Image (tube, rainbow over all chains, first blue to last red; front, top):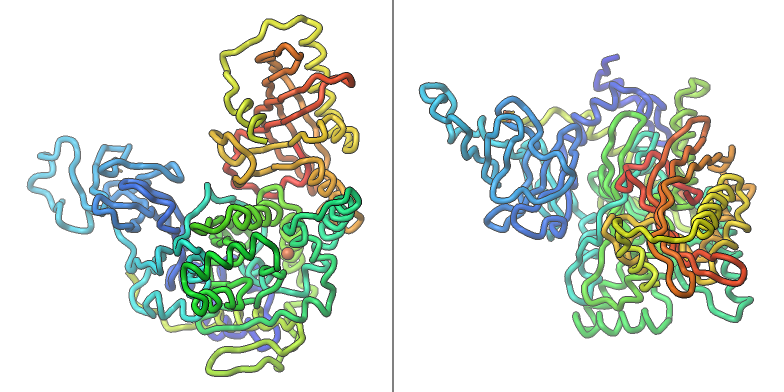
Length: 442
Length: 178
Ligand code: FES
Ligand SMILES: [Fe+2]
């Protein structure tokens, strides 16, 4: 069906959202057009393309793009499409293309900035409208390409906020990924893990800051981790700290989870405050803190380490956990299919043990064999199918509705609660994006 | 774990050891039993195939030479195996309701080397169907085993599993070992 602006606006109420927002394929197409192809979407980190000619593919909305490091050593983003007859230029997900792009269909070649370089039997184009200087015959560049401290984004439409304004308070997630490094640099480790969720992209985002689910969803894994901890203690040793990342799920209980507030920022971003005792008093952490003090001076170091973010959702496309050095990108494929790519970062000059600790979390919570996400994925799949039912038209966001606090355009969850603030906040932003007057398109 | 990981990473596809028929049969039987125990979910018996300091490893990259300190698909010692089994068999392991079923076929068993102590490096291939949530999906890949000869028979020092589709994307988590 086609949706009018009024009908779309009617899908979101202050404390509930209509199931069609999650299940309707036409709504999905409109989301791609009005959100994913009209605001800033994450492409990748500069350390994925270290050498000239290195490239990495990504999907922005419905558009395939290439992140490329050019001959001038600058990172750029281009559409992955040949201006001749439309073939995709790069087909491997990553690689090095050398000094130019080469199309495998009729051998047109392009400079790394996308300009047309040549083709076989070039003279046959003499006397035609093909013009080497006309961008029509170049690999196209998205309307806006920019980066925030080495994290690259594109906006496929002109107009709107610049990247920095769009990120606003959410930029802290990227700052933290870098600034927590005593060496003041961060770097991707290995390739990403890719998982297809059989559910709507919003169901994933709504899960990420939901403090009321881990104790329930992850109870079995929490209990299993406690069992292993007990066995290790029985053998006279202290269990490694990373096991507590899992056993906490069974240990924290309702009162434990209400300690962590949530915050909703401008443009749809939101965060969950710090938890998990990520600054314990152990020799490795103390060594890390010492290196931070040495690198930044005590005051600045404490400011960085004191930033109270466990998890930041950068609307609509990233879920970032800076204290564990991981970043996830959301690439919606269909109304009931979502690709996520999760990346792990290494903080330059942090002690090896600190890196290993976050790597253990990455393994246990986000690898393709994770026991944690196994149960999350299953819930999301069940939600997607449940919402196909017309038993009720609404999804409830009532927990602490109307009781959050708002100051200067930022909303804060009601204290000592597992408020569903982020859910209300994101759907409110969704309505704003979906009903905004159409900006200037490319 | 460095030494065992390096040994299996350096495995030479052109190396074929001239072992006795008896050794060949014993190793094959061991590999078949490994798969059977997984398929039948006799997990404690399966874990007992590993030496106390043995590891199960599914690397994320083809050219990976070390499991420790790297992103992996699986990287588990006896402790993590115990945790996975405890979780998967917990009554509130929601995504294990209904339980999956696995069906392995192991073949192409080529013993690469047998040292003076009787320790073996062996390559083989597997196909595995997983029935999950009323649908079948298929995995296939290459096994590399480092087997230590003990009085109680062979023990797995390291089982390296390279999936043909290791980069994914995965349409669901691998909750059980393959
Ligand atoms: S489609 Fe690319 S050269 Fe023809
Ligand atoms: Fe979860």
